Image 1 (cartoon, rainbow, N blue to C red):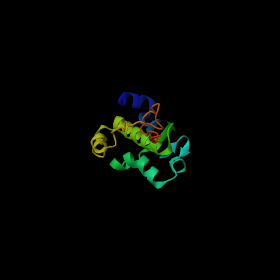
Image 2 (tube, rainbow, N blue to C red; image 1 turned 90 degrees about the vertical axis):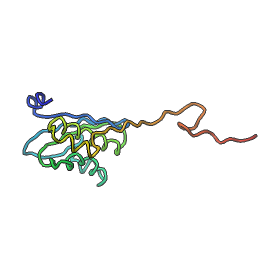
Image 3 (cartoon, rainbow, N blue to C red; image 1 turned 120 degrees about the vertical axis):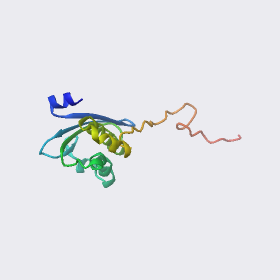
Image 4 (tube, rainbow, N blue to C red; image 1 turned 30 degrees about the horizontal axis):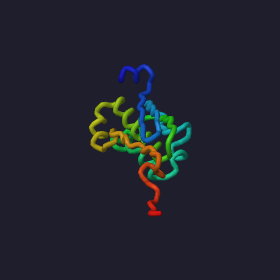
Length: 136
């Protein structure tokens, strides 16, 4: 993967969570910024908790001020989008710098959460909720 990074200048990582898909590109350089769907990260993710989730891989190793991060994310809700961005950013950092992998692995930032919404079954109100039983 290092060959691709040297030719194009960026490293890419893909993160998925529920129905959200995030494509993260990190580019080393002096212009340090974090953009999500062409908006600053603080505008896109409004709460402090979501911003913390997104920036976790950068703060784990202390490489926050080395990269320009560009993210394209779609699908799902805002919380699952933040977790997808976090996973994609961690994967991109692993592809760029191999020594970061152990720190990210210990912080459980490379583990994908594969849980999906369970489908609704016929005869039931939701996936598992059944109609109220009546004797007559």
